[in-house]
Image 1 (cartoon, rainbow, N blue to C red):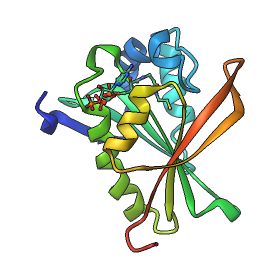
Image 2: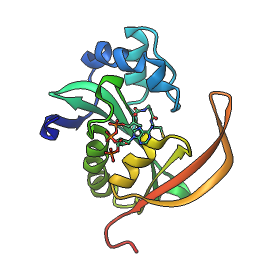
Image 3: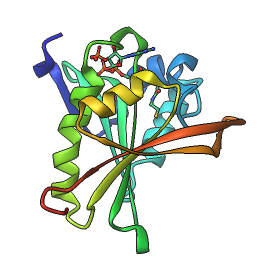
Length: 170
Ligand SMILES: CC(C)(COP(=O)(O)OP(=O)(O)OC[C@H]1O[C@@H](n2cnc3c(N)ncnc32)[C@H](O)[C@@H]1OP(=O)(O)O)[C@@H](O)C(=O)NCCC(=O)NCCS
């Protein structure tokens, strides 16, 4: 995979069909908070509902077609120093370095766009080796293992917290 084919951009309504092809796949959604989408209409509604200032949501594109998403929840109030990052990618593109590249592209953009964010963090199930590896390759540091931290789709989760700090914020 030529990683220059990968871009991050806001979702467009015309991405709905492509989005359905990966966000309609339980293998993509089971490890994250995404609900598996069932129709193009649900994909459109998802795009519209999540296009808000509190969420920096980008489509992970290959040749400008949507094959995944990367989100950053922008903290507010006493948590304005923090952003929470998440991502998911179409199964046929797993293992090619695409999500790592997307995270590497997103991190400096988010720090630049939101100067109040000093810390980007990600929480991932301790057994999600692919996701943990993405974060490690993208320069995140493991902060902690939090046992029985929350429920995801009815299952209690042991999660690892990773973070990366804004340049010069140490
Ligand atoms: C996790 C996910 C985003 C990874 O995306 P990806 O584009 O395949 O990731 P990359 O190719 O950039 O890197 C994956 C790394 O994990 C490694 N990896 C993947 N599965 C692994 C496993 N079961 N055991 C060990 N390593 C694994 C790969 O070998 C690669 O590391 P390497 O480059 O050192 O070989 C993707 O699998 C996905 O969408 N999963 C479902 C949603 C999800 O889990 N989201 C995260 C929720 S916190």
